[in-house]
Amino acid sequence: MRATLSRGWCNPRGFSSLALGIVVIAAMPALIATQFELSDSPSLVSLGTAGNYAILAGTAVTNSGLTQITGNLGVSPGTVLTGFPPGTISGSQDVANAAAQQAQSDLTAAFSDAAGRTPTASVTGDIGGQTLTPGVTG
Image (tube, rainbow, N blue to C red; front, side, top):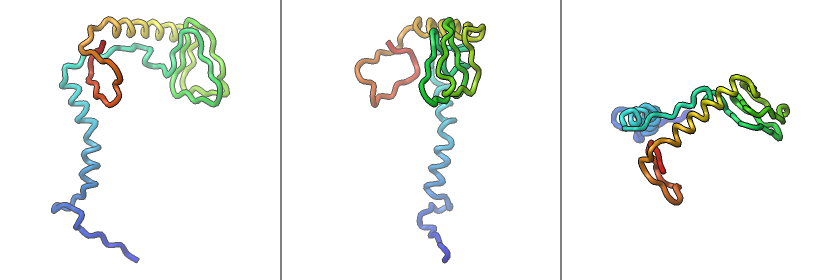
């Protein structure tokens, strides 16, 4: 048995609506990136080395179960890391070492930077269904 498709569902140039949809979807990231680059967005908050961690805690990390952490895990100044195994970590484990201390310092700097910015908009109530643009809200 052989299936034959009619060109009735295609536009005159032979492209289907599905093909057009795929092209539009594939182009969306570039369009979105261009939009954000052209806007007057505030500069990003730099996380420094804290951005290298999937989990970064100050006192302790406790796991119960078969948790899988994809990335690095850091604890500082605390030293408690329990539940690994059975949990697994695909990256490094930095517990009260220089790397974890630096990440905590960078995280504190990032928090201070973000907290010190002047709000550009106010958001009140339920934000469900709203589109929030880049900026600082108060």
